[in-house]
Image 1 (tube, rainbow, N blue to C red):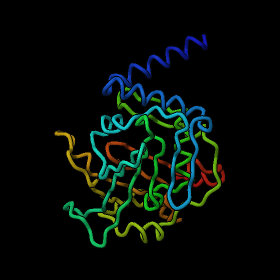
Image 2: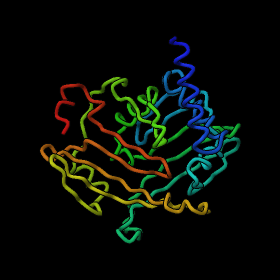
Image 3: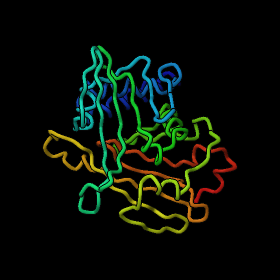
Length: 256
């Protein structure tokens, strides 16, 4: 029965992913998703000034990223047998005008000789909204992710991830790097700061122009001024992290 259940679950995931977009791209995405359940076997992480996920047995190709995101990178560089892409996001005002001095972050992709992704790097500025410890925990939690067929989303199971001992970012530190938000709204125990970034993109496929805009919502605990949640969309990829889901239980008890 267990074996049958696993087979049915796989067939459900496989058919869902194929229904979402091109078959080949989602087959590679599915193969990568399945690797997440054995994270250390198929991936490694380095976190210094930036944060990089290294793919040990990569399945995703350069064309997969373009097909899934519907956006080409800001810059494309060829270095011998390797290829380097950068997606650059710049902070904009309410009228989508670039700000000066510039506030920006980037995501880099490095591809090997077979055009498969070797490394995925997030810049230091991105780590202000998704600190390295929590970003790694989020990647690891994808191994037990559930697929929402109606919304076509992966929902990671934070309870399956190893808990971490880390400090939540403080509002003052985040504002120092990101500057003032476009908008501040209030909930019972949270202050929500909304930022907007624009991808420096070119040759955007018709009908997907809105994917160049990235809205980031940061939720701070009113009492502690700690960053407790983040949600945003980056080149068509939606990310939502509740940082306290990954903390040891003594910290999680404070979650509003």
